[in-house]
Length: 195
Image 1 (cartoon, rainbow, N blue to C red):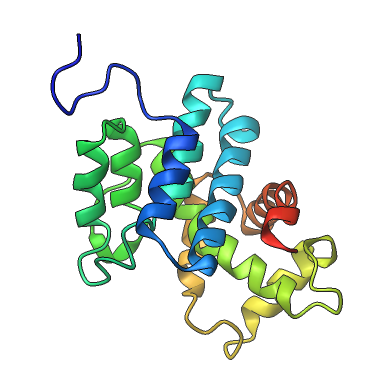
Image 2 (cartoon, rainbow, N blue to C red):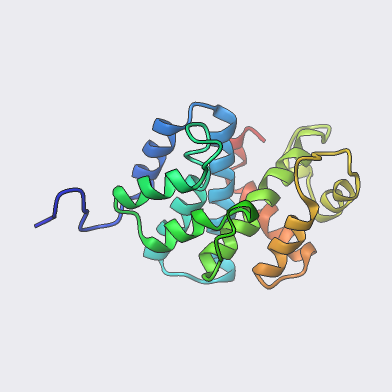
């Protein structure tokens, strides 16, 4: 029997999508969640070799890392973390959401937390690179084109370049390999992203 407000099984990916849509009206922010989900899932499957059950948690963490941003831009992700706990999400997911940006000061101590951190800004940056390619397609994005845009300080200037590099280090890879992996993950959902 379940206690009030406590689930006997963790929420599913479908539950996570419903929560994202409930709390996030911006199509762009929803697509960002889908992008980070895809990149984090790529890492879970190919780099960290997590179980199928654990992969669902990884997908949900990527999808939900910014779900509370529209409602609580000044206290994001702290407010969202409490909502995730209330809805029965695993603490490993909550920790990854809390640690996905340097602004929280929350320590990243699990592979999932490192993956969400590494994939958040890099996914956004790779998508920005795709937008300026002639065909606006992820098929046109490669490591070289991403590295070239990273050197251009006027391009996607809101993305901290040091965080892109730090993310690669946190998943234990050179920057070039991390870029390649994120691009591979994003290509798996290029249709959903319109790229």
